[in-house]
Length: 242
Ligand code: F6R
Image (cartoon, rainbow, N blue to C red):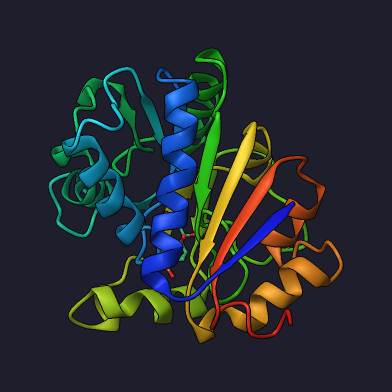
């Protein structure tokens, strides 16, 4: 695991974008695993700029997102489908047919999860998976639990996650209580991982994730067992590591 500590959110975003850009230069047809939430927005802005300047291309990229609220229509501006178009896909030269997000309207979430994992596997697996981290240690929407969930599945969101995500909604009552998420097992099959975190609100969980024991109560701690993880933090998020 390599940990980079940057000065602030903008520098974290630039470092994250640099890592993805270097990757795309070596493998233009990469399978990118992508995340939503506040953390990667700045990195996506940087990638959009690089794409506009012709420094990188997404023409041959396939994208696989971690998760989607459930149930939610793609057209809902709170859906992660909408988020990805708004924050990245609509602004770069990616073929939208090569972008994949769990179906928030799946009739059968178990079948959807299996099909999603199969899709990821059949296309050769994720080359580099972007992750944020929840204040409770979740990655994707794998909430603290007694086990590390192996496969893509339906999940009931933690009270902490609902509270954390309420900032994106008019009121906490509007925050969906369910989601479909790649499992921890699915995430761990990615060949490499780029986890971003910013701000003092993430400092304690990062200490637990990086310096504590591997425990499904801190789902991100499993990344201690992955062979190729880059963690890009800003100084506030890194405060309890020093
Ligand atoms: C998003 C996701 C979540 C977020 C996490 C952090 O697709 O899977 O795990 O990465 O909740 O969210 P922010 O970045 O808003 O702090």
